[in-house]
Length: 386
Image (cartoon, rainbow, N blue to C red):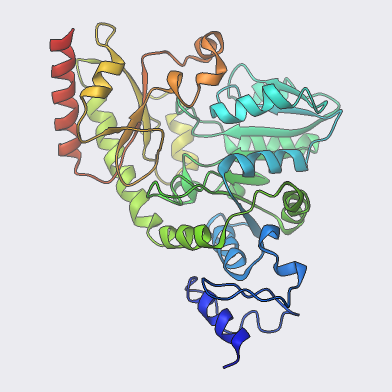
């Protein structure tokens, strides 16, 4: 075996489904491992251009999971979101976005798009007609998030896809909260699917990554901009992400089951004012969620009764940790008003229904009885402190 083949075989062991000879036909590829980097370089294998062997192999897996023709991975969820948006928008264009979005996406739009001459409109709701009412002659993209962060609203995938096709627009979704295990938007006609792969794809709170899945043509357009913006993922993080995705199916199914039990438990609790979870029959979008989701997900939000301090409650938790992270195997909580949606400002959060008392709960794979016991002791300590 010559030196180049040795380097190639080393890296291919990082990705279980890549054949040893899959890339031997490439012209002067860049073979990289922990030990080898060669001067005989073809720009097509330049790591910043998203296409070293394990990057390409992982993209194929993500595309398969999302029933897409192709996919591209990024250094973060926001890198994936910003690159996808800017691929299909230029100065003078207009985008219609769902009102309730991840705070980082909202901040990107409101802080940067005016500088670039891109117009935008946020809906007042999340029904298909709310989006269609805002479409203008220069509208190019409809952007949704379902389930949404942090209120778990559900938007009809069929409805949005039909409106986009009717008006010749690109439809995009942030599918992070659902994961490809629970929801495949392309099956419902959505054009571009985006993930913060940091979350359910990663699942262990130890990486930062993003992903976009779509048609070959759309991914080629996204890649054309991505290689200039430079939001690529390191080979080592690609390996970690591919490792994590091997267990995504069983992790997410366990989180689905736990979240359903925790939502039902909290919904019946005397100290809980409101629970936001699409798996509860009294959720206003329950029927839509049943139609387009295979599982209701591991995320929920809730509010304590008004006489209980939400921050004191979170500090009193022992098993469940206060953390910015979500979708890991460990259960975590945070206050959106102080973290993920802090940049929206108090007035905008109030308009969207995100109260200062709202707690976002990312349910892990622990025993539900242990999670319930932790919540009970934290509620007791919160009452005593009050």
